[in-house]
Image (cartoon, rainbow, N blue to C red; front, side, top):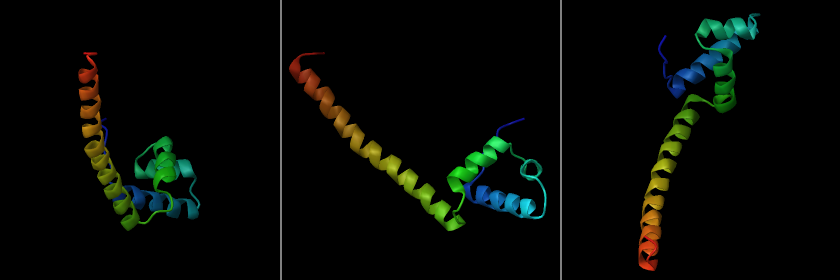
Amino acid sequence: MGRQRHKPEEIVAKLRQVDVLVSQGQSVAEAVRSIGVTEVTYYRWRQEFGGLKIEQVKRLKDLEVENARLRRVVSDPTLDKLILQEAAKGNF
């Protein structure tokens, strides 16, 4: 069985679906099985995306991508600077 990547919008929809099924009287385990994920995955998703709406999830993911890009932009020149400093000291 292959591993499937779920989009954040799908995750929020599945979390809502589990909430509906639980409110209708199903146990959490049965509801989680009906959406096709494990309980561990469900609780991990709930911890990350629990009270968010779809728009907020999209914005969160966009910000994470932007943050990673900015970190690379800052870390590359810093690394180059450290390499040049070591070379200038003669510790190569």
